Image 1: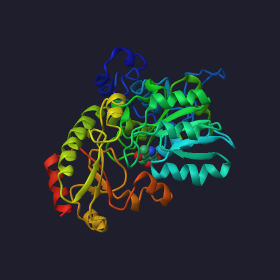
Image 2: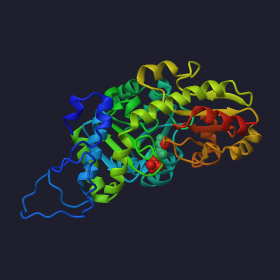
Image 3: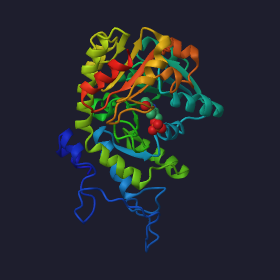
Length: 384
Ligand SMILES: *Cc1c(COP(=O)(O)O)cnc(C)c1O
């Protein structure tokens, strides 16, 4: 497995999944459900399996697979994207200041401000797409910077390399939430990030059928620190869910390419729709960070946000979608739509939402792999 990353090009690496893992020659990684493993010696072997809260062969295959795709040193698979952020938060202590992107997944905000702030960690929000704001807020000392790029739901793009330099000067860890692009379209560790986290529930697994999170580290030392928390706490991913995630990743490149093709078509379609005020997509030359996205990413992804002119009619439009499911989550093969201001973003204070531009007329669309003409037909009837 580990050798695969050096020998194979990206699409080959993705298709090979977990690789051949055991002596049977099975090309699908087996699901090892055993909770415990037998040993006839008390000598500790760091490569052996002991107990499934610590390690399982199936989970290990997933961790190696994603670490290779992200150009990281190693990874940890946990029960959800928020569990991944929760484990990363264990690196901080009372009194530490952590800088976070002001536009972000509502659940992440809730974890920071309603859980970890109780333990004395101080969270400061910065418009991380504006380096001056990052520099200004970093003054006074910070221990970490958590960047979501593209951000949810406004799809702002932050300059990972430039922020990693600020983080280094401060002696702070740079953590990037790479959920919206997947390693296929962005490799934050190559740009200076220390840790990459994923809600693998989204693009990595890709089928809206499993909840999973991944933490990829740039160094062995960071992985060791984080592993200590995962095995002490017990939120490692189950073998069955690890298998589903491995299976999902095998088709990542074809899914995401098709989703992106559909998104580019829908960008043009939505921009010309009379009910739409404006569309947000990093692949649009009018997007404020389009040039940065072109430089930093190898694709623009398949998330589109748009604002309708008649905000009062947004709930009515929302109710009319038929092909596109009205559901939270994103990244799967089925297109999903939601109104962030009425759901996902609720944990974030209104003032902060107004600041980043999250309004009542804003829709967030996760574009799937359907026939794009069916998606256009659905949008046409829903926005009429
Ligand atoms: C969904 C999501 C999360 C949380 O992941 P879960 O798997 O739902 O716990 C974190 N960050 C981003 C950007 C997400 O979209």
